[in-house]
Length: 239
Image 1 (cartoon, rainbow, N blue to C red):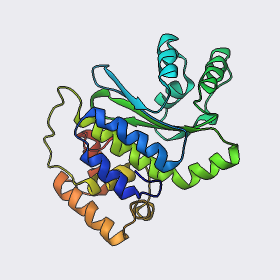
Image 2 (image 1 turned 45 degrees about the vertical axis):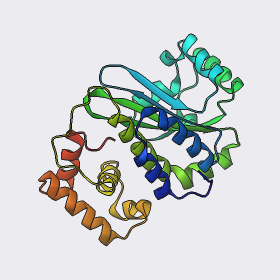
Image 3 (image 1 turned 30 degrees about the vertical axis):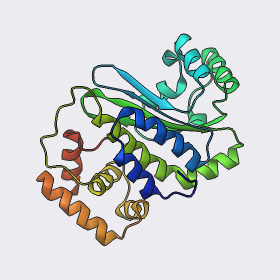
Image 4 (image 1 turned 60 degrees about the vertical axis):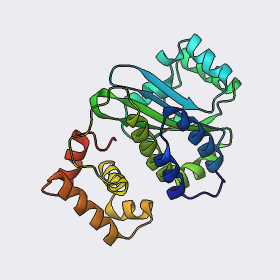
């Protein structure tokens, strides 16, 4: 996957995956496409089973598990309490355990900057999509300002694909929304304006209106807000 690949091309690659193992290849390619040191996806399903893929070293993954860092990791703890993407430096690193963890992570090449997107799915599923890098604050601020919307969209696409592989997953009873209808509903649920959604998806507001009306009809919703609520309650979108 070349560095100049478009967002639509990345989403097409994701749509084409047919097994969890293939998501590892995709996330490695995404790291190169975005030019960051690491990208990681971590999923906890409805029965507590965990799945992860990413570009951290095997040594760090093993150490993270052996030290049981999951219980003190400010990224996990902070994002579990949030619904919106967060820059790691906005999290609480003041405790001694958190500072020790941070030093260990940086020693293992995780990077001094990070950006995580918390995702909540149906039936208690929780996931994080993160990217991290080693650079100065100004460089990272420019990166997140210009790429955050793409990362959010990719994170939700990535999670939706992972959910397809969840063991014993119940089939959806609702009429399926198209990928673009899911994109539109997801971004609206996250608080984007119609203009921002259209800009993020690189479509006109007229085309966006067509997607929204189609989704509203499939969901039997009275208006856009009702459509978003129904899509979320039925697990058709995750935010």
